[in-house]
Structures are given as C-alpha cells and as structure tokens.
Length: 222
Ligand code: DC
Image (cartoon, rainbow, N blue to C red):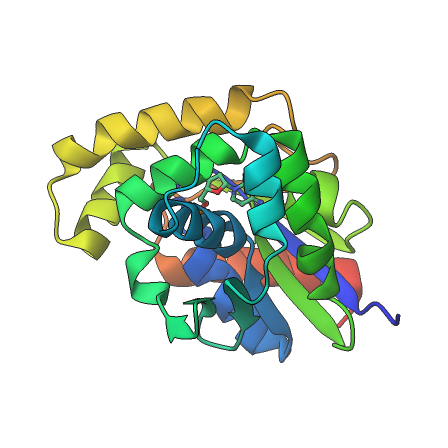
C-alpha cells in the first residue's frame, strides 16, 4: 500500500496538539488524525460493553471488533462510532480519558490498534498525526516530528475551559494521566529524536501554529 508523507505531533494531555495539528493539516492541505481517538474509542467501547479493564486479551480482542466500534478521519474531527452511533462527543470526558490512559499500557492493546493508525497514512498525499507515540512508534520515519508541551497549570486551564469545569478538579486527574503515559513500559510518551520541542505556555495559538508550520515547511521544502 502506498504511504503518504507524515508529520507527527506528540505531547502530554491538553498541550494543544489537537488544535495545532488540525490547523497545520489544513494549511498543508493534508489529512489529519488524532490517535488518542483510538484509545478513547476503545475505552468507551470497553466501558459500554462492561469489559474487564484488567483483561489485556479481552481488550485486545475488542480493539479489533470493527463492527462494534470504529474510528473515522475527517478534516474537523477524528470521530468514534459505537454500534453505528457517533459517540465522539462522549469520548472526551476525563473518565474516558483516564480509562484510555490505563488500557494504553497493555502491549497487546497497543499493537492491536497500531495497524489501523498506520493505515491512516495510506492513500493520502500527506498526514498530520498527533498523540503520544506517533513520532517514536507509529510513524518512526515521519518527515518532521514535533513535541508540544505546556505547563501543568496551563494545560489544566485549557481542558477546564473546553469542558466547562474547574481547573483544580482537572489538575489531579491530568497529573495522574501524564504520569501513567510517561512511565508505562510499552511505548512511553517521550520526545522523539530530532523533534522540534515547543513549550506553548506563553505563546498564543497563532504563534504556535506559525512556529510549527515554519519548521515543517523547512523540513519538507514545501
Ligand atoms: O491525546 P488524548 O488525551 O486524546 O489520549 C488519551 C489517552 O490515550 C492518553 O492518555 C494515552 C493514550 N494514547 C496513547 O497511549 N498513545 C497515543 N498515540 C495517543 C493516546
């Protein structure tokens, strides 16, 4: 299968990688995927079907049940469908994020989701993929890699604004999720080699996208 060019943006929860990567994809005229949707979608399906969240084999089997749940890419969102229903709005709850983070440490779950994530770069001229391990594991030969981060407070405030919640309530769950994501044995979140590391704490959205776009265009010569 023909593979298109790939740019990856990794980073911790609520670092802005979703909005930045989506805007970058628009500017390049490329496809876009948020790989967290695969983990969130599986977490949602596991909760709905009352799967045992400790059972790695059962979760890996559920990961492959495309008739139960599926991920679809489009320009505005990476959507999740469960039993034919679009449940994308429901997967961003912090409880689903927390289960997603927990089940993402199972190697069999990660490898079950890998093929579908990689397939996103097939039959497209280019793909911007965001997540935790896009530059290290999913697309190790990506043309350009970015690692986007921001202070804990800044990220909690961002997620609180999105969810209409209180930053203090979010910060505990987010800290725990960062810890889980970066200390797990299987594909821990880390800065990919040769990545542009960008701390967005004191930068506006336009500045971040501008920096990322400049870096990517220089790498791709486009
Ligand atoms: O990016 P996000 O917050 O939507 O991701 C939800 C969880 O999914 C995250 O806490 C860990 C997991 N995840 C992962 O392990 N690898 C990825 N590439 C993307 C997400």
